Image 1 (cartoon, rainbow, N blue to C red):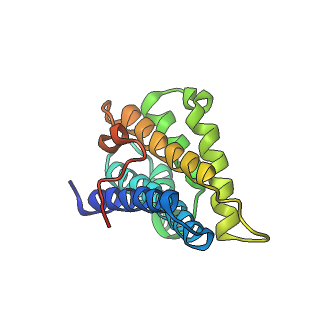
Image 2: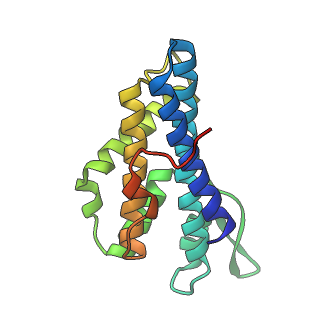
Length: 179
């Protein structure tokens, strides 16, 4: 397992552990802090998993320079008559997930899956915490749903790409950590 894969898995386990702590927390301030940590770490884990997959597949010859640029979030520029990757060109997380699904499964059936719409709701919740304009509604249930959607999204990517289950999916929201 590559270092980024191990780190991505660690982030997910930390997110699940913070959720577990939030659920048993006795006061609202502590609970909310742990829910916020769980939500942000779960998205860091998803980004790390997606980045690791994109990095792995960007080295394959089947992808055009523009597709590689999209996977690596770099701009494809014409330099001296040839396209080269340079600079940063951010892409939406859900677009990168959709691209990977479509490329490896050959269809867009993931869009009908429950996790796809749940992931959209989770992204909206994360955005209210990342770019607050009011008080985010990171309740226990909303955070559980967000983490479950992220786990399901990674599971779906593993099934589409590697044709095998995501190892952590079988544990659901239960963490391996005890801090």
